[in-house]
Amino acid sequence: MEFFKRSMLELIIDASTNLPPDVRRALAQAQLREEAGTRAALALGTIADNVITAETDQGPICQDTGMPTFEIHTPVDCNQLVLERDIKEAVVEATRLGKLRTNSVDSLTGVNSGDNLGPGTPVIHFHQWERDDIEVKLILKGGGCENKNIQYSLPMELEGLGKAGRDLDGVRKCALHAVYQAQGQGCAAGFIGVAIGGDRTSGYQHAKEQLFRPLDDVNPDAALRELEQYVMDNANKLGIGTMGFGGAVTLLGCKIGVQNRLPASFFVSVAYNCWAFRRQGVTIDAETGGITSWLYKEGGGKLEKSSGNVADGAIVLKAPITEEQIRALTVGDVVLIDGAMHTGRDALHKYLLDHDSPMELAGGVLYHCGPVMLQDESGWHVKAAGPTTSSREEPYQADIIKKFGLRVVIGKGGMGARTLQALSEQGAVYLNAIGGAAQYYAHCVTDVEGVHFLDEFGIPEAMWHLQVRGFPAIVTMDAHGNSLHADVLNSSKKKLEAFAEPVFK
Image (cartoon, rainbow, N blue to C red; front, top):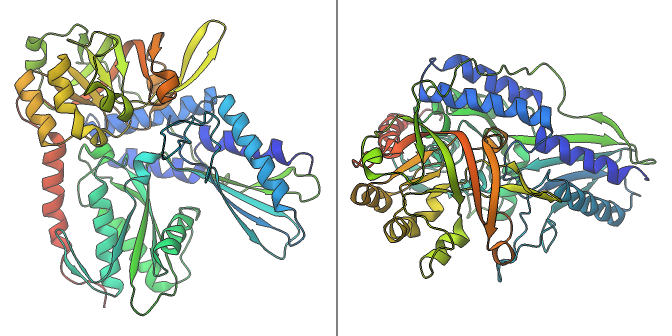
């Protein structure tokens, strides 16, 4: 097994930097369905550019490389302790190379391990089989979409859909509701794995296992095959669209499995995955540890670079930004940021409530981002820098805007009513960057000027001070009380209500 560790490193790098062909085909088909010039088309074009750049540069497709989860089948006599050791060493090496972000955080102290190792990380599930080879499947599922996983205990009332009973029609309602509740926070257009039955633990596990199925496979159960197609056809009628901007394509894949359950329990578990569907697998020679084949490499999956220019008609902002400049913006405007930008996530927002900022933020730009960073003799370099989900900062954002005089907040998925009110009162704006487009945005960074709280918070949560050029985003919450996110939520809820009547008996 001398080559197993190297094979695992190759698997991790490929999963992080190269979307499989079936996912690329789904994204290419989505591009064809959106009208040119729309917000959804712009977002999908940026996504396509990002995927191509990530493959070319071998950089992480999304900066949130998730919690690496391995599903492994081994022959009966295989030493799984050795495999686990080699996998962990490969994870450490991939982190050192910047292919994985440092994502393993102590739940009690908040300290980042710095190498993606710690209790429970990475996740490794072993299974034995009566074959002579080894199969390793890997999924990198980021926190933004992981947070949109959802589990239902039937019967129950669902918003917009009414009662979901303990039957296939109840499952139908759960699947539609799962897509609805994700909105743009899960980086739509997305994919769902659905598990019917099991217990609370095995249900979520089985739901995530559905994500390993090829997108073009055929469910052997006729009833589930029909339900999968129904969900695909009708979830896209909700109008949520890419990034929650509205549009024709909201769901790119739906796979449903079933397990037995206890008489007292009827769980429907949904694993939601973003468009950056990073899963890959290999078969391994059990003698040498070398890769003999790849599991998700079949078929063409070519994406074309976007032909549109995001800068056309865009409004350029450079800190310090005035209130007059902000009040001139409205929802739907495309903005390009030049100059200074500061990153800030959960730890920084909590800190700033009770402390001064180490940098002047008046008239400035705060970016909800946990980048992948590497350091060499010349300094720090951004390797991936897409936005994180902004809703986590809702308890803090309004106070921080007021306290420090921020003019621009950038993230993904939108924010709530309290932040919207602060934007109106203070003359600030929320910009939605394209979630997952980590390589696209990394190329907009011209310099890393410094960092604060690196030792205290770790790389993703530190406050990075960047210089950017031509950094594009869309105004989705303006200083006049308008929110595209609220509009799409309300519109999709009305459309969801049309699916309340029973369909499956």
